[in-house]
Length: 202
Image 1 (cartoon, rainbow, N blue to C red):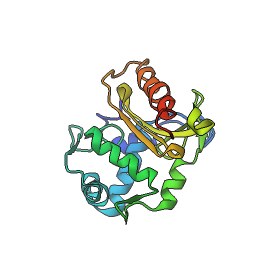
Image 2: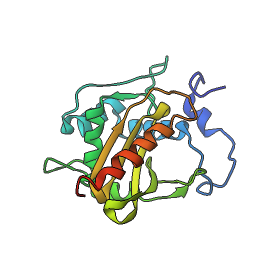
Image 3: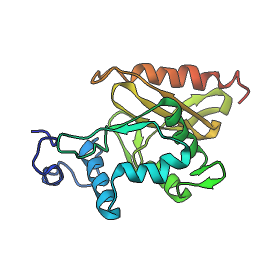
Image 4: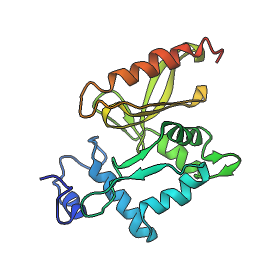
């Protein structure tokens, strides 16, 4: 039984049996993201849409977005947000600028630093911070392996960041539920964008 049709989806998530001690094994869980979304809503007394619009999207000049919800009207924090590629790129630039947008502090720098810090290793050679995948890639322009950070979405959706090069990139793709969907955007990032930083004089 999936969490979506559960009478109380949050209770359903919390009642799942533990398979390892917390903090010792990485398993991606949209349910964990759903819990954090609900904590934010209950703690502030506001919906995720209102919070995102007022605290993030409006300051970034983002107005064209939608957030899908389940049949019961509950928003999907893990996979429901839809926005344009240029607007997602703004989020990437905000992170690269340590939370500042056009001279205005939008996100605390301490949170940016903490969220990009690797917390636990995944099963595929990457690390994971607070909602960011963390890895390294060879960048000749930077003298060797350089850290990158990314938000991964189903089907090959990606927001890539390389702070050392001050580069952010967005890849949109629709290969949903395809286990090979990671290959093309990863090659675009490593073999085209990062590899050609040498030509850009980075």
